[in-house]
Image (cartoon, rainbow, N blue to C red; front, side, top):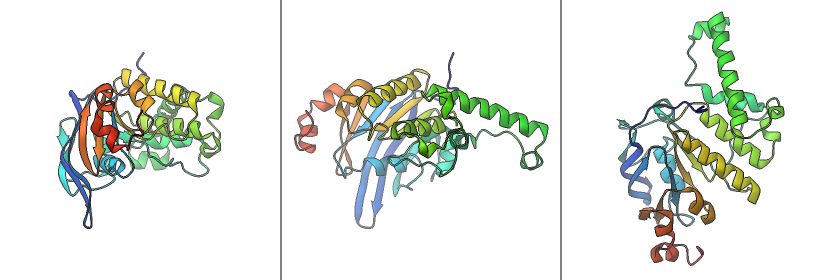
Length: 264
């Protein structure tokens, strides 16, 4: 059974053309073209300061681009907000974990259901039967996703911030999946994890892709890139340096030069 109902998407789930971000006189992202295919794992890599996170912020509505255009499936706007992107089928996690102090794991995951709530505001305020039924449906869905990302049932009522670092990452992924995205953007999802945690979350990402969600991720661990990514875009000094399969990209002398010989 498919655990992740998603928004129907065409072959290209996320697309950018001529994407640029300028801060003052500094060009952080310059003329980026990107195609993230549906049902795929696409990685963006590059040395520190290459513009990866700025590009992902612009692709996901958290940083207005200075120029260029972004499509989610066949939908585009002159200027996206993060809320509009969520409505169109994009969800994301962040490099720095963003959990809400004091909220339980269940409450945190339920935050991701904001775009799915089908009750009216009066129904919600008066707690009518329709609203209660909708809340129950979303809670059952949240519990299902908590299990799906590998968290024990016992964590449901625990404060999310009390969990281990790796499990907090799982909570973030479950919260993002709660919105039933067609595109999931992960900013360094394996940062700070040990070897076994990386292996477990890498497998979770594979399962997410197999169930129909396109994944765009920033990652620094080249072993993870080799094992996960079907396509890799390399950024350097704000521009796309090259793009292709992980094998081809990581053997490119230009990529090795950009990393100052650190990619072995």
